[in-house]
Amino acid sequence: MLPYLAIAVHHNYTKSLAIFIPKMIDLQCTHRDVHPVRRTDGAWTGMFTDLFIESILTAGLKSTGGLTRGLGFNQSTRLLFLLSRPICAEISQSIFEIAGRSSDEEDGHREQTASRIQRDMSDIDKALQVLLERGVFSTSSRKLVSFSTGLVGDDNLNADEAKAVGDKTLESMVDQSVGSNTFSRKRQVKTLASAAHVKTSTGERMEIDPKHLYQCLLIMGVGEIPL
Image (cartoon, rainbow, N blue to C red; front, side):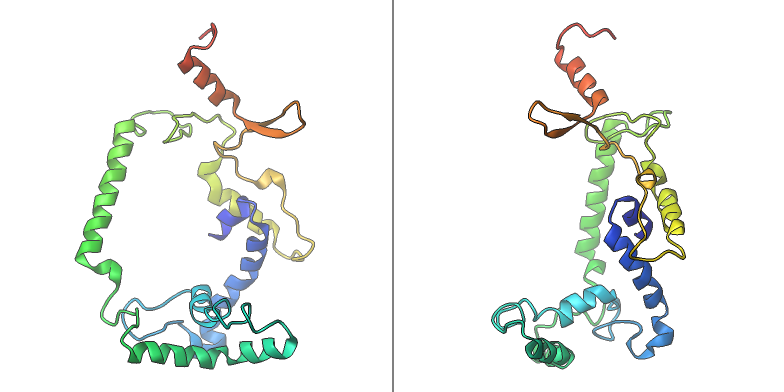
């Protein structure tokens, strides 16, 4: 996702992940005891580190009696609460297991059940039928077309080259300081939503796509617009 975050103007995510991802790749060498991250030894129980932190270590921070609801924010309280979280998480998980309320599947994954597979296949078939009805694959044009509105993009759009544009943005970050590095607007991807901006009489900025507006006027039959 890193190239797509870079071209979607998520600058903080891009900078942070550029440092975080290499550390996670080296996790099996630097911290063998926590690689891979999993809650149980069953099948399909591996999970991303950020999800593990949110669901295990951070779960009690925002609950009743947690750090943000009742205990306060002085330094001693923060240190005591944060340093005790790993132990508290182990105790909490053990209580769930004793009570038989653990959501972890030992023998498989919930998405491997017959009912889930059947529902997924049904959803795929519905999506395919919509695309076939709209005839989005029946044209030889190389231009981008909106599935929902039928709006046809011009040659300036490069959403289909998002990864290549994002990779160039990431290459420009190499050997640059995280704090001083900036992102050029020229390297942002241009989509069908990249509408022109006009100023209203009150000074507000409003998005308007001239081509989309022209198509709407044609459909409504407003005025005598020459074809």
